[in-house]
Image 1 (cartoon, helix red, strand yellow):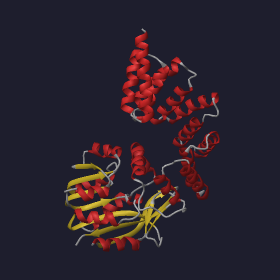
Image 2 (tube, helix red, strand yellow):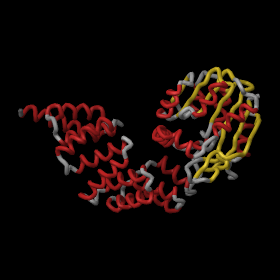
Image 3 (cartoon, helix red, strand yellow):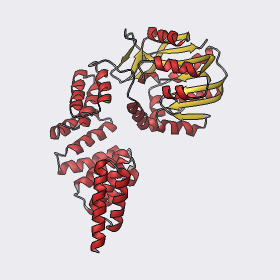
Image 4 (cartoon, helix red, strand yellow):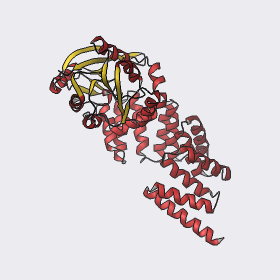
Length: 398
């Protein structure tokens, strides 16, 4: 019996060491072995669940935490990890209730206030979420994520100076410098980077995939339809091969399919690609950054489409050059952007979207060797019942 206990303890301590060092697979194996030797031990259940949460497997973490809470209802760590699992499973209302019970017992729990704010944000209760982040920072002013989330709420509320101050605090406390530089640029505090950070875009659309189509419908989004209509008007009714850049869930692809003998798509988000693949309309799909894809693919196309993709890319010179590589002579490159009159040619807006100026698009087209067939001004979407000005372009490779 003692040997079994000692073995379980060794495995548990090894698991803690692996977890702290970020060796998550090794930590999971140790905690599973320890739990098999000493079933039901709360600390092991909680640490195994925490490991699985970090591995991105909340569905296998939650039953462990339910068991831990049933055994030790007052265990704060089990309650905290359980709330995180619920949030990761897309159950923010349940996560919020669990956090409120925890905060009743420990109102100075900074991490719980941070998660409380995130749950409120997921429920679109933004003013309350701001208060929760303030409570988190009152308990621990070094929480970079709380400063970051607070800054984004202030940015969305149009309080740019206060948002910038929060982002600078996040930087001072070890926040992601690349991402925070992007956020600061959106407040006008520094020059805009050439594009949004890739991990920001990937995470945004992975999280957004399940509700993407319904959300666009609620916004009255028809930019992809207008873009395809423009291409048809110019005579591209039937092509041998088309590429859907930033294909997302396949909304544009569904319109392209009847026009193209072969249809390929590329997107940075694996979750969006899963939904596109389920439609069964693409001959090939690639999970990649779009310039990287364009620079290495052996495919050549008569038509390349990018609907609402360049809102996350400011400088388009690399994109245009790479499209030129895959486009066959006489082929067309059609895209839409949000528009701006900024003299710099593109601007990062408080919405974290880039907008482009018509003269900039014409200059980039000329530089890449394209002819501008059409450049039309028209709205791209609605935002709070306000039309967002856009540009619809169709370029042709001579």
